[in-house]
Image 1 (cartoon, rainbow, N blue to C red):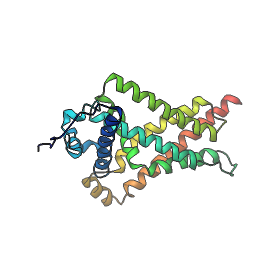
Image 2 (spheres, helix red, strand yellow):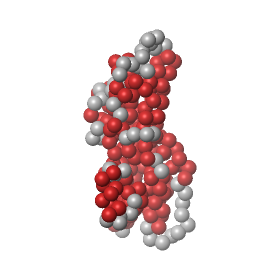
Image 3 (cartoon, rainbow, N blue to C red):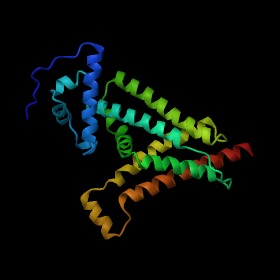
Image 4 (tube, rainbow, N blue to C red):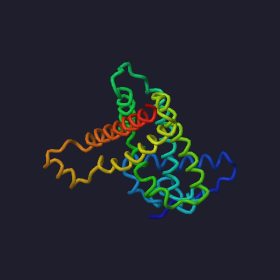
Length: 229
């Protein structure tokens, strides 16, 4: 399929470049609404925005760089929502605060399908085909996002050290990345899971994420208590 690129003019002014980048990101977001990132090629993405692949690559390093940009904006938006939704609990029973915070984090992530999907392929796929300059910039932003998440956890659980909160932030990403593939099984696997009378995959993801985060946060708090006793 040939791409209709007649009338294409290279964006030269900063506002033109930004507008072209936004158009490409809009196309990527729209496609991610109907298919997983693994099924979206650079050719297909280029065609959807009406540009040749070479023209898309004038604005982004690669297909992977485009999706990392989408990941970053979803990461920031999730943190914005989480900062507003995290509230203290009045339950003062042992580890109630940790369970409350971990459950709130898990619930907020379950509602962020796209973020979870992109996190699940971040290290293994999306970071494999980018330049050093883009990698440096993305890692800087990812570090800021992770640090912001750790600060939110520390503000809710001040008895945890900043290092412990940072560790929880890192482990959260690992747990999401590990569990997410099970949330969207293939058609064949759905048949098998139904035969086994297993819960829906989405329910198993939500349960596994909540339990994993609770165990991590309770464990970190228990270790912190032994250091101060």
